[in-house]
Length: 440
Image (cartoon, rainbow, N blue to C red):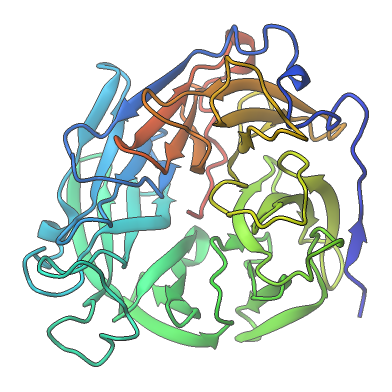
């Protein structure tokens, strides 16, 4: 068995030095990157946007989620480039016949679970749980597991025809559980999902509409699944190990070594994937972890028995590790490749007296758009995303549309919504969303 290779990268002069400071940005970095925020004004209960993806038509789709309000529902939206605003496509609870006043936990959100089908123009989506019943302040899936009146009916899988703007069909993907993340193997017409709260790998055959439970991975869900060229499905477990499902073996396997993390105070526990972006040639993926002091890495799944993993270092600013830090504040997400062949992502930056005082032009917390060159691994600050009345440091997902512009989903203060970052003309290309990302 070949060993998992971890190569630590120290901060590179001019690239990562000063990562958390305003001076890290090139002079005038944001001048050619206009940023605009689009709030979910027509769904005022919405409080998060977990899913954002390019559809099979190259347009941007996002989920206006309402998980903090009793009886809340999710409404898929689409960016309308002709009118430069958002189209609200439908109330998902109505389409799957699970009304918000049923007394059960509601169809409140789509969580990293938009996946396209390019061959027929269908966008698949699956729902997640957390929103309370209409007459309760909160919902616990464990407490209500055996309660037929309160228990979540299950993750609803819905097929939306983007050519006709029509819901084709729906099914229950995972009874009683939510779908944490979704993946589509289009060639084999198969969906893969991670369930919550049990963290099981679920397979759904789109030809037969039958599901199969492959087994439990752990207690902490990875926030994404990804597919390699051999149709193997990858995620992570509780302790930061790569987890692989090989269809030909029909079994789950766990890698021998742990993914990159801060060795000074972390063991790898909770170093699960938060976001994973495929390189344009599909030879490798770029990933970031969901933990304090999130790490970037490059993974080569097609090499060797277990992948070669390159440690690209912390995604966010230096800080004093002796003090606890919320994962909501110390965060990185929105990984996506743009038309210029560079990786873009959003990392949080915050005011810190010792490590990052920041000047008066900066909010206490902000989202910084970074560009990473795959050839040199050099990072450059591109621009900041600005929310009209609060911080915008937490980005869930990113995508590039068919025109080559970047979009990011926002989680945090209301109003929730999405950001558009207009790319300079020399960094855009037609159909920049291709080859399309097949996981949420």
